Length: 408
Image (cartoon, rainbow, N blue to C red):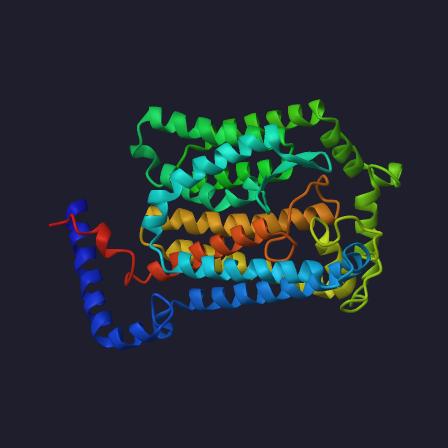
């Protein structure tokens, strides 16, 4: 019965492919995209516009938040802005490459890169550069790599490989994969990087839930993760200070609570309409990490409550489009990849905002496409490219025929 239904689906897709090839063959050869714009799903059209707006907005906000410290410390007001633009170029190139690659192909080679980056995360705990109490970076030549950022797209792909057909996978393979994911989270916690470890755990939990893992099992894993996080905080003075300052930052305004207090002052001084673009006072080296971990506070100060509301609305629209893309996907793999991409980009943005507003403990988590950093930018473009590719594959014109050839 299932095979006959698959045959019917295959015939329908073949018919649509023939129509597509005959009507759009000339246009396709002239197009830079895998599908002509006229037959893109409306979700894909909206998504690429949202990504473009997000990227341009990021460049503008970064330029405003970093020019003062760049002038004082680097002697060039555009130092961080220029470096971010330089990283944007390969980011867009990677976005284009991912957009023109089948999700199935990405899933095939993702494991190799996943374990290479896994090993690099292990190395950061041994030979990594320690900055502000965390060892998250490796120096490779003239590059500073942050493997915990670069691994994020491959976390999505590997989780999709595991959860797409959860009930058909043998128990030993499940155990090996779950052990690998658990060990990865522990290594990230060891850096320490509680925010990225939490985001990784949330990503696996949501994808597992959507992949059909029993809720009782997921609750057990969530409880284990919560206990592990608590143990990490209790055994790490750096994280313990972050948590205590989150509970009452005003108790120690000049030391452990300084970052959060300055962030709240920036957000509060924005008022309803903000101070105006480029007119933030807190970025004059009052607020630490104003162009990375607390860039949203500068945005809130310059654009006010109205700007923050619009940005949250932007994230809501992005999340809705991601959900619609996942619902339209034609197989479990692309469905889970789309869900993972939406959860990671939107979830990381919300967590960044939560840190800046004092809704969760202060941790170093960049705002996708906006915070300064080449590693985060590259990972964000890769994830956005996968999400857009999932939308294009939902049409049935690309990425589908090879998976149906075995049906006779």
